[in-house]
Image (tube, rainbow, N blue to C red; front, side, top):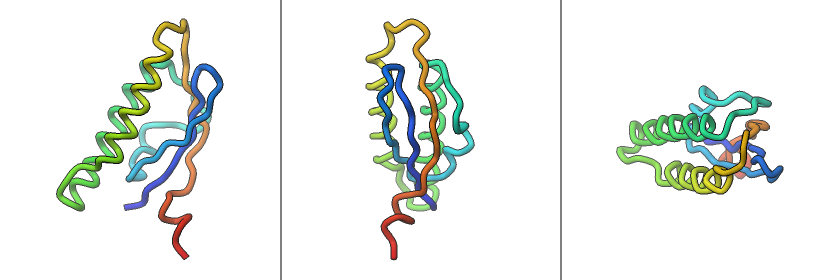
Length: 103
């Protein structure tokens, strides 16, 4: 199951690298797309639930790293709730961690 990382830009301009244990998240986000904050959170919930279910199907248990990444995204998004018209930009998908660390 190929993992991957991706980069987003928060409303304040900060960029963040995020991890997914499954490439299924490619079905939820589009590179270069800007999402309204609440839409981004909803997409993330669906994406990381699907990624965790992929892990469950293979290993018999959900992925704690997917849950942790989702919790981080939700927590960070809460800091922008009072910003009018807050958006998150999905910058790009990167190669998975496994492919970058294997020889």
